[in-house]
Image 1 (cartoon, rainbow, N blue to C red):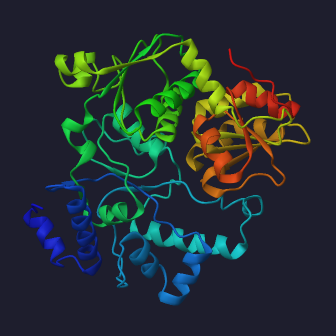
Image 2 (cartoon, rainbow, N blue to C red):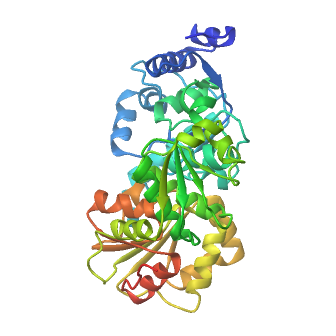
Image 3 (cartoon, helix red, strand yellow):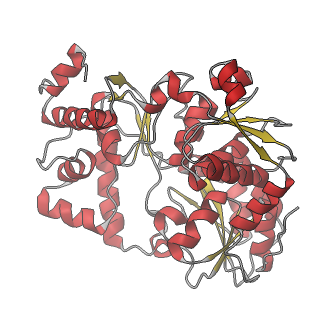
Length: 430
């Protein structure tokens, strides 16, 4: 790989052993990917916290948080002292909600270890935003900016909606990027890989957030890891709809970038999205009509058998302030059924504003629990005895049945609130 003088100096140990080990990891990673060089980044989304009992035992045996970071974030069998980070970094969601250990099924020792780890990473300069939606809480890169992000739903939003550039990174590569301000230049950092590969034509109304989730789920299933270019959008989707679309597409497939013609920044026209008129002309055309819409709804609800609902989860990806407001409007004056639980997940920064505005009070007066920093997929935590769950997230309806063996119903937010208050699923395709 071609290195600049600055990169060579970091690799040679000028900035200490930790940075040298980080450069070693990035060079091994880049060579495996076929990258010819590194690219500078000052925007990282990382998961480098310490929460598991295994990590706690490792820290006790090997010498504390420096040892945990060395092993799990730098792939280093040598314990190195970790310096202040070089690149601006925000943290992804956690494996549990630290304020709700009993609901999450974790003991006090695990919570205390998390607090120790949080103090360590924030001491390095990491921003403990603890969310899968960093773009909602202050990490908002600009078009063309090179990033190193984890979390599939965040990566697809970063590339597609914001027009910034990142691949779906892992704990080790972002750990190294934090310390060096570098990441291998491959994949979606390169113009050629950001061009469309499939032409998707919408031929039925796609309006609600749940419609966008279904469209995303269908698109991901069709194109897998390619780059769809979507035409026929009748109304510009808001943040929540784009968030749910991307999360679904990256769950049923491996989509990390898409284009909405006339809406997303790199698709002012069909030709621009494909990188030329000829590429647009020969691209495979996929049509999303009423039949595909219905079939996708039936597929994502395939595990739903029983009408009695034990658990309703909202907030995957983490709810926006607008979504919390909408949920509060839908539930105000009502009560969650005694045999059902309603958990709503959001970023801590957003919850703080919802607390201030009284939104949280409305939701919790109705019997909901508003929680920050995690979700049921990350924590593997649901109310005890849950057999049947309902979601307004196609991503969660995709993952949680496989993770926890529960039945899943998918619908819009109003249908989910109705299920929480009645204890029964009454949603249907419309």
